[in-house]
Image 1 (cartoon, rainbow, N blue to C red):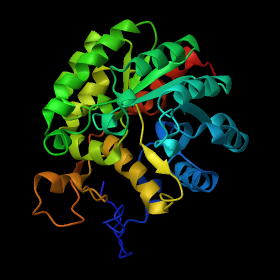
Image 2 (cartoon, one colour):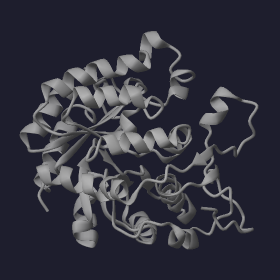
Image 3 (cartoon, rainbow, N blue to C red):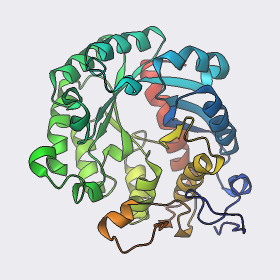
Image 4 (cartoon, rainbow, N blue to C red):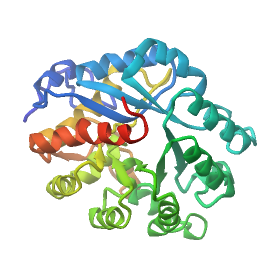
Length: 340
């Protein structure tokens, strides 16, 4: 599929000058899509987000929104939304934010019907607060609490390979990438009786063989495809291996975008670019430049100019695989903890 490039001024999320409203109508899939990984942070931004979601057939959304916004979002968007419990990152400077307040918020989210609890365990998290380490007593206490309240567990583990080669070169402090999965495996075993969802292809789209081994060891583990720039860059290096991976693991790969909608991220092109790029990757055999700036490319090659984008290579899933990834897997997983 060749996009209809126009001469519109380009944006960091639209280097190709695409008319995303038109491109949305040209994508092959016509069924529903559930996005299990978004961040809706205020009502005006949520309104813009749903304008884009409607264009790209996104019917249901799981969102990491502030606890204080849950009632307002629910009143406006109803059953289209499911909420994911998160700490109050706006108060990240307060010592209790990731300890006692976090535990109270888990209870508050559960009281509002939330059935997913997110743990952000990126290596850089320890720079923010030691309680964010996956092996911290607070994390273990919070996981036990969330489980007791009927929640499934969501995890952000590891980060791109490019970051371990640059941002995380101090392996004494951050550990190697394989080491990130040691504690995770212990926790998956400890909480083997509830489902888990690992964001961003469990932090390892670069190495699908390692990811397969993780899924084989832990049948309670599921993954999502969020973090669009990262997924486009890495999965485009082996699109057919990615397609085979999804076919080999039906019901365990869920569609997610990591779209962020707040006062700083309300651009139509920014939000639309994530859905166009991911859907083009999954549905088509397009081979060409991604429309989205990817600064990670410059981490390893500083000679690349600003605005460089990776190559996007479509995997062209068959309809049955698309149906499972786009909504079937999410429906099945959510029904285990929160029947609709």
